[in-house]
Image (spheres, rainbow, N blue to C red):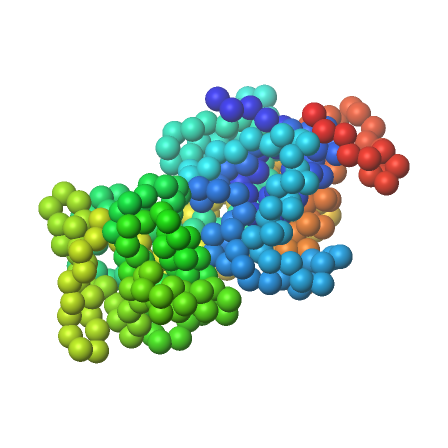
Length: 334
């Protein structure tokens, strides 16, 4: 059983900033996220996308924002349960919550803060007939450890930042060969990444196939190749792994069954402290809804700040909370 003061569901920017605000109040945090690394969409889907509405930054890449947040909260030593989805919640006799993940990991805390962005993310799967037969047998939707592909022949499908970034990374001394397949001739990713992929193709370091798509998988108990449909017909490409990187589809997931008031796939909250209809459970960031709601990261930061003040009073009802400014007291970690 993992015990903490505030259990945060979602390790995106808002969830990470919650650790900072809680840390200032000497509250410890543990974060659960279905993705294999912190950062949410910013890290998984568009790490190189520029963001323009973060205070004090005229422009910051999404991935850099995550890195900065991780550095900011390091003094408070948060702990993470990554690659697992928060599935069930139950109330204890002493007014705490036990949250269990899809892999059976149990967490207990007096306060739960749902900062799940648009919800849990599930991979967008292509309509390939025998796809399910090869999942985790050469078909991967998320690249967790690039060294796993050392010396392997890989095929990557997709036209966004994730597909472009991993094509570039694996082509530079990691994989034995990289084939990138995209249904169109134009890409949706960062222009710099697109240019790098095209340069790699021109130099013969990757096999770039546009106006093409994977329509079949071959192999026995593991992938040994894919069938690719092109304008000229179908081609077979031998490979050890195929990664269809078409992004992740957001869903509220099991949280929708926790007894919370939900409206249009978002959790209703009281704007006084962003509490839900269940005392002790809060919802902050894009996952919540209220009149005038704006789905912006900076709004989530504000919501996290007020939520932590309320959480402290719930955890320590007999203590007097006095707001202390960091400009005066600095940041004192654990």
